[in-house]
Each structure stands twice: as structure tokens, then as C-alpha cells.
Length: 466
Image 1 (cartoon, one colour):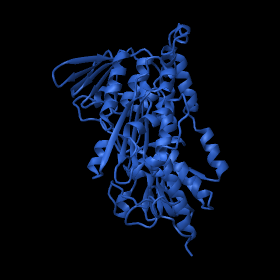
Image 2 (cartoon, rainbow, N blue to C red; image 1 turned 135 degrees about the vertical axis):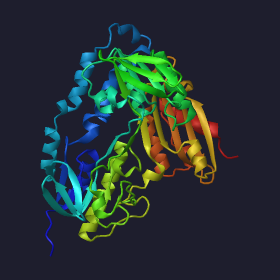
Image 3 (cartoon, helix red, strand yellow; image 1 turned 30 degrees about the vertical axis):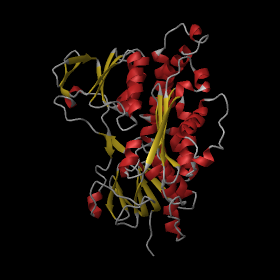
């Protein structure tokens, strides 16, 4: 009988890897995590948590200014040092002692170092090769840096450097109009930076068209210089530290720092995939098992399915359970929506952009639904016309949209833009996952006066059958 060091080795100790390990351990599997940086990963130290901490103070100030009586009480300026200190507190000062203690309490072994495959079921860390019956890759993603002359030499910030910044630059250029670029534009503008955003397309171009329009207007109101349809042609950093970005039309922009937020790709670098005959693109089934293997799993951003922390953790819960079931020889419940699969990756991925206004969406946009061949009808409504929203903020602006599959009379997509709309999203996610028909949704009565009344207004706009 073959002896293994562990039943399962997880390469990557971020939120996704931790959840794979946790769910497998709870089923009696002996698990080790291999981590080369901080246990807790990108989200805990350089992404989700610190970036949202940077954003929150500005949101609170703006929310107060939108309500008569409260705005008069806000007489001071935001304290950048206090905001940065609060951000740092959320990262535990970039120390992972608490996360390591949790691994120990959960009975999960920690192996420090860079892990790479050395063959089927073999993981090399330094000079030592560890064996396991199953291996899960949870190495996340890495930034994609645009191929612009001089950009790399200009020492730009990536999202890591922005989230962990020790000071607030007086001028900041942001290249990229996606989620990270938009959020950091709001964050640093609220902290006192003069921000310029450069984007080849509309902001958040993959969402409904009104999303980018609302965000561009809000950023402009904040004093952010938003330039759409532009491309950097050259970047230089002078000896005095000033960065110059030359655009394709010859215009020049100067700043103290430059943030590049032009997307991410799966982190499959130096994982030893070639030792088992695989290339860098990992294809998995809904249990996260890598095609062509019966022992290797790829979970979270590394598989490229749905590159969001919460979706990666969802995949991890399914994968941890599936790995444990296979190792124990018990049935794998891999039918759609079963215990061991991540079915929601295909139809019900929720996403939030913590801009101001917030953007919250789940499922398909109207364009993507039509591309998928669905017979859909879309309805929209002005969020600022809802009584609860008017109470929430004077002059509340926002919009909501539902995309309905006419054949099944169920929602396949929902998008909300407005102050604090992130808390509306889970009801839409439940409706899509549960395939709740529009006829039944009429009986889900929103409380009055809340922003959730938007659900009734959208249904009224859609109309009931005659």
C-alpha cells in the first residue's frame, strides 16, 4: 500500500486555498497548504479588504453630504493618515499570525515556500518533495501590464502597491477603467489626490451601458479627469520622480504616481505543469477537477472561470467536498446544483464594484443574454424615483435593470447602480439561482419605504400577463 505525506496538498494559502483545505479537513482528509507569501492571500492583504477600507471613509462623507441636517454637521476634511491607518489595521500590519493560528486550530499543516508540481501527486517545495493523493492549485491571478514603451521602467503602481500605499500622492494617473481602476480613482480622489483616469473604452465596459455613464458622471463630480477612448503611447519617469504619460494624440499628463490596472490573468507561472504534460491554460469540470487527470484540481482565479474572491471560495467549498468524497470512495453529487459542483459559475455570478455610486450585478447583461441565444426582454427603472431611495439621500441617482428569459419567465440578469445598492444584490442572486418565476416574485412584497421597493417597480414596468 502506497504511503503519502498527506491526502491533499493545496498550493496557495489565500482565501480559496484555505476554503478547499477547510472543507476537505472537516471530512477527515489530512491536508497541507503550501504558501510562499502571507497566509490569507491577495484579498486579505492587497485587494478586497484594504481597498474597501480605503474607499469606506469617502463613501461615509459623501453619504452624509447627501442628507440635509447631516451635511451641516460635516465641517472638517477627511484625514488621510487615519484612513491609511484603518486600512493597515484590516491587514493586521501585513502579518499573517492570525491566519496561521487558524490553520493550526483547524488541523491543517502549513508548508512555507514556493510549491510546484514534480509529477503526479508530487509537490516540490525547496529541496523537499511532498506526496499526496490529490493536489489542488489555488494560486490566484497576477496583473497584466500593458505593453507601453517606458511603462515598466517608470516603476508604476499595481493594485498591490495602491492598496498598500504609505502616502497619498498629490497627483495620480490611473490606466484602466475596470473595477480596480475605478475603485482606486474614487479612493484616492477622496483622500486628496488629483486623479486622471485613462481608459480605452467606457468605464466597466462589460456591464450594462448605463453603468459607465453613471460612474463617469460621479467621478467628474468628484473632480476626477476621466478620459475615455484614449491609449497611452509612451510613459516616462523623470529623475525628480514625476511621471509623464504621452497619449496617442500627443497630449501629455503629469503625475507623482501612476497606477496600472489593466486586468489580471491566471497565475500558472512556475507551477511545474509541464511535468505532467499540461500547459498554462487549465480546464476544469464543475467539481474543479482538471481535465485529463483524476487527482489534480484548479480552484479560483487560476482556472479563469469566475475571477472573484467570493466565487473562488464557492468553488473551493464544492471542491473540498468533492475531493473528500473521492478520496473516501463515497458518491460524488455532481449533477447541476449538487453538493460537489460550482454550477453558479455559469449563470449566477454576483459582482459588486465599491464605487460611489455602487455597482451591483448578477447573471447576464442583456447583451450577453442575447449572445447566448436567449429570448429576453429587459426592463429598467430610475432608482431615484423610489421612495426609500429618496429617504436614503437627497437627490438620489441610480438605475436598475432586470433581464428576463421570456421562455421560462425567470430573471437571468440584474444590475443596480446607486448608493448602497450592494445590499440589494443577494435577493437578485437568490431569484436567479432559485429560478423564481416572475409570477411568484409578485408575492415577494418589499418593505416600505426601502430601496428594495425597486423590485415592485421593475415588476410593474414588466407587467403581469393579461
